[in-house]
View 1: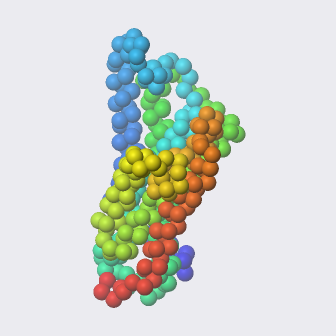
View 2 (view 1 turned 60 degrees about the vertical axis):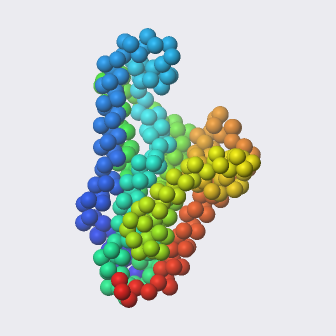
View 3 (view 1 turned 135 degrees about the horizontal axis):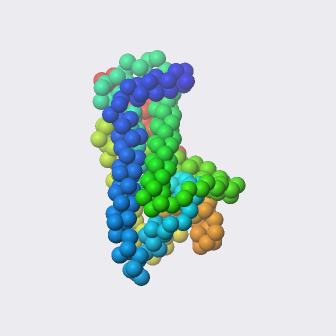
Length: 290
């Protein structure tokens, strides 16, 4: 029955071309366009920029004629797959799935054919696939960006992927996927509680912005960024800490003792608690008027 529900949700989403475009294609297209424009602008100002001793090393590196390692570029791209733009636009597809039946008043038509838990878990499963697809599109966009960079700056291409780099790549991809799902969980809970598509879209954004600004007020109250309260209130920072541990090296060594455990607990709670709340609320919800 769960498989049937997943197939039904997947079929419905596949027919929603608008949601698929905004969730999958928009951010990669914009990323490639901005990356190409940036490279052409840097190329046009190359002589001036290279003569500036205060130029950031990232810009100076972009202007070099050395070899561009596509394997290393993919690993770097994997670390940024859960950036704010991806979170925002994947949330469009997720909110459409979570709140669409409330908007079109179709819950009462399908809830008699399957259990409520299966119906909600099917939406989550399709969102998980949508997140993976969005990440795949972003990786393709990264490859295109780097090919453009190589062409503009006349850099030779190479591809190397050691076992350590492959481990980092898989770790970054898995963590980014988890971060997207965790962010979407707030949208599911908001959709079930409010029965509103707009709430499913904006509530996670409000929480995300609020979490971003929590460190400074907490520090003014004497709560350090690596304290339990600070980490539990900010799953984004918790994800960054886990990513540093995956990256290893100096980033991992700089992590305070015990922070990694706090980070995993934070991410786990922000993923499972909204899911449990949505399932519990939905099981008791009156859908007779939907």
